[in-house]
Amino acid sequence: MASLRGLIFDVDGTLAETEELHRAAFNQAFEEAGLGWTWRRDDYRRLLRTTGGKERIAQYAGEVGKPGLDIAALHRRKTAIYGERMASGRIALRPGVENLIRTAREREIALAIATTTTRANVEALFAATLGTEALDWFAAVCTANEAPVKKPDPQVYLLALQILGLGPDECLAFEDSANGLKAALAAGITTVVTPSTYTADDDFSGAALVIRDLEGLAEAQDRWTGSNPAGGVTALLRSIAA
Ligand code: XBP
Ligand code: MG
Image (cartoon, rainbow, N blue to C red):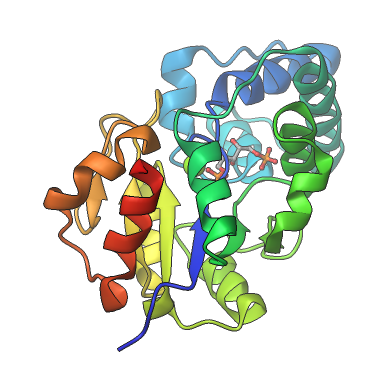
């Protein structure tokens, strides 16, 4: 039986509640471009079903009938604004994230990132939280730059597994959204979901565990419904609690 050898993390909504910063960055980029668009929270909740910023802009441009927009340039500006706002803001990792990452390192369990966001945004989040050097703790950092086909497609998870050199039965994925969960499950990976502000009403069927945040992971052992590779999950959860 396989043992637990890798943890693969989604970024937006899972490591940190970043979507309000994304929304603000989109809106500032739209304003600077003179588009007269403002995505309010309810708009954004709906638009988040389209994964990836460029795809989300394209979806909206189609809805409001704005052909010929330079989506790549608009998105580049959005990414720059996001980085600036992240550097001057107060984004924190969600409860339990840092402890889990540090525990995995102590137990020599490999770490990976599998996200649909842009690599620069991952670097900005690490610079603002654990420090830039902490990205080196991750054996695979897979983003939209390396895996352009967005979740719920499993491409980014399959790439992470390939780089880690691990099978799906040796890993756990951590997600916050239905699209992310679908992507991880399609790659065959047992998945823990911590719903975020924008995804609380998503359908998390198929998740091994749905918990408020990763701080609750240690106490959630009894509710584990997914596969438990060689007892590795229980051992990991025990050491998080210790
Ligand atoms: C999902 C997202 C991203 C961001 C936008 O990412 O929410 O699409 O909204 O980022 P994750 P980009 O898989 O990490 O949850 O503008 O860089 O695409
Ligand atoms: Mg997410």
